[in-house]
Amino acid sequence: AFSARTIDANEAARLGLVQRVFPASELHAQTQAYAREIAAGATVAIGLTKRLLDLAPHSTYQAMTEHEIGAAIQAIATHDQGEALRAFAEKRTANFQGC
Image (cartoon, rainbow, N blue to C red; front, side):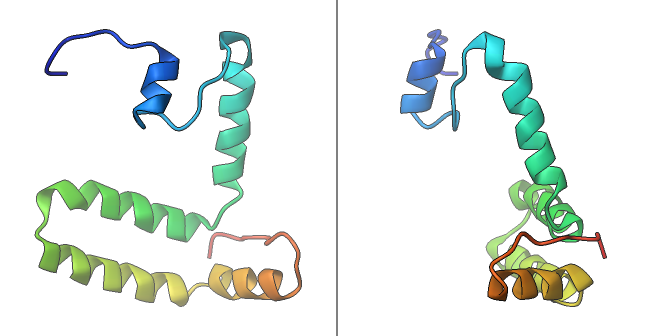
């Protein structure tokens, strides 16, 4: 941003600006697979995480700590939390319901 220098995907990955690099021919399939992976997760926890990320740039450390505690309390109270623990104990994939 400061130098206006163009970098390629491999350099972006090396610098930690992106997590993974794919050939253009694989990008759509890989993006869809990643979206399915996220969608299969605990939707309440994902929503809370998104909310926390939105708040972070505009919050103090103290305020974020309070937001995170509140989010953790909300997440722990969900059915999905119990399902995650059961699935882990039973060594199976969790079946999240979004509640």
